[in-house]
Length: 213
Image (cartoon, rainbow, N blue to C red; front, side, top):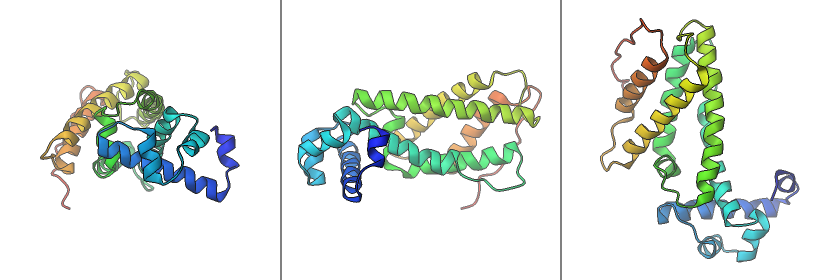
């Protein structure tokens, strides 16, 4: 179903579509990243044919679940207002804290970042949304360069790709542990890694104590 068709859904149709997404979400969590159409339909208490009506295929449903995850991610992290009067470094520290907290608490975060979604459509949807995050990151690095807080000699898109790749690997490792590191500990480790990657060459980041909860 394309976006134009989604806009034309009745309230009942939109509710059914969302129920299928929610059911697929829970199925992926409980199976560790695999999805069966019949199981999703049973969970959503609808006929299997409705799944194909709203999503076209199992791949379409999987893509919808992954995109719903990234929509929440973008809304809470990248589109969030960090407040007025902050410089680049202050804004980014707040944004990174939000990002870590979001991924710690969204149940799908661990499966997505650890690449445990076994459906091929999930990998494709993830790659598309990651490319969008790299675009946003590149613009953000360029903004920090304009504000004089980042090394002007680095390529913004390469820096964004390097940071996001490292960040996802670190988060995937942390979220897969039985005893997860605290969000404060993880924040400090990721911030130092990222800041050293893109800061001025002669600048060092002062070590700050973890925030008191």
